[in-house]
Amino acid sequence: MWQIVRAGLANESSFHYLYRSMYVCVCFAVTESEIRAAIEAGATTREVVTKHCRAGGDCGSCHGMIEQMIEDHLEDQLAAQQPTITACPPAVSSGERLVASADLVRGNRAA
Image (cartoon, rainbow, N blue to C red; front, side):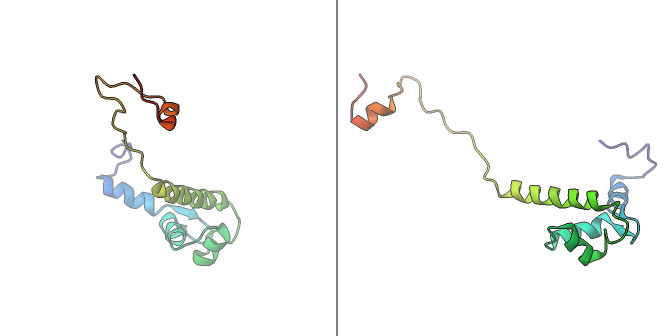
């Protein structure tokens, strides 16, 4: 867990408020939550984020962070679209034998 108490914050919600209000673009005072809103609205490049909220439109020191935020968002979307793999039931119950697939194709039965 984060060291919330050492930072002097009363509770975890205070921490999340400060985290969401951290400035990414100091030149235009754009917070992380404003950039996330632009990305969630469909911005897939830094240039589109800049058009949406001006972040990254001046000195360029925040470009890397904005691009990382976009990449993280796209990875999260991709992971959410991946099907989950569930455990398969055992192929053989006690007392049964495995039959080679070639035998099944040829119609042979295992002895």
